[in-house]
Length: 311
Image (cartoon, rainbow, N blue to C red):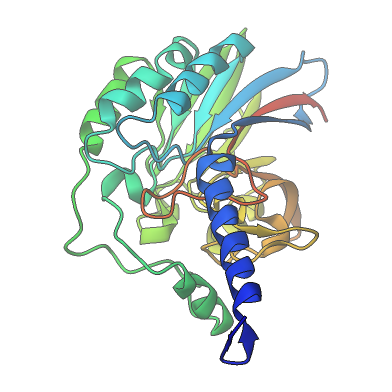
């Protein structure tokens, strides 16, 4: 068989076939292989029963994603004590009704939410290789992106109104409270640091000491935000945004985080240290993808059930 550029055509065809199979798996199978991660975090005051928190993140709903909708609806069967939504619900301006339908059963439980950039703006077609190039040049995400200009406006107001009508607490650069089985939970949230909408000065001052437990919530886990929350002594920070790296190398892990967080903490539970203090941090790998890069590899879509236990 004739060679091209010094490579036998049979080998070239084999590589092409393997690549095509990998893409087919990443888009057709793994991107729809929804999982539930279970994590235990020892942050509760003494003599409190464990609390179960369901974190959903990065749904990136595109109209017609029925399997994702059914899976999200099924999570209500876990009967969590409360729900935290860490943003990027949309990847389609027409997706709001389907997000609200998918989360409808979960909105029967107490909950709170922050938004991500894709809730506000429609995604743009972008070469995924740019993330790797910018990472190598140490440019991407160091301080977040510039405010979006000329992007498609997503109807985030309708999403907000739907969440608010269900009683979920909006945490856009503000504080809120949930009462769960007699336990007062104070929440402090920020708007998305990825597009520089975070305003920590508006919520600074540390946890509400009158509450039984205080949690910090943000979409994108940028270090400036993690440092601020940790220095203010929040015991647990919940975030999303990273997609867990989305395309991960077996036995190595994520190549990028899409922010300035290190790849070792791209998903799951870890600890963050700042100002002489330490916080737990949980980063959800999320259950969706940007509509223009609908693939996942070695990083299945997920939601997380966090069981908060006695410290």
